[in-house]
Amino acid sequence: TMGLYPPGSVFKILVAGAGLQEGVVTPDTEFNDAGTVTAGGYVVRNYGDSVYGQHTFTEALAKSINTTFAKVGVQLGNETLARYARDFGFDEDVPWPLGGAVSRFPDPADMDKAHLAQASFGQGEVLATPLEIALATSAVANEGEIMKPYMVQRVLDYHQNVLKETRPEVWLRPLTSDVAAQVRDL
Image (cartoon, rainbow, N blue to C red):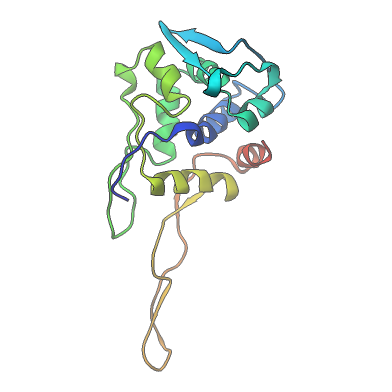
């Protein structure tokens, strides 16, 4: 809960949700990958210098193609990607009693195209706790909803009477249930 790390490719799940929800991509949107793409002077490379050629957005997520996600992020733009990061819980205190570090997405006003491209595949100045990533990705499995985390479901006395019980509660809704299902299918 206290460590902040570049989330890397798991951040692509958020970008995929944003891209689908904003209509920037569909699962069948075609891309052509030459192994690199330049955004704002920064050269984005795929892991292992892989080249994927023609592929769909579905394949881009399955194969974790950095260049495609850089293109999608740049197309979404600074403000939109930052809004989705906040909708997924970045720059917010996680509502639970144990506290922790606040996951960070760069201020969109300070981002140029190079920084945006890097952020779009979870690098650059994006920092997240493992708990944030678990919560954010849970939206895909939970019909677009992120639940408030908790540690103790029920407290009982020695007669097994319930003294306190935690009820599941929605914290954030970054995606529609339809888009969450599309990302899950990807």
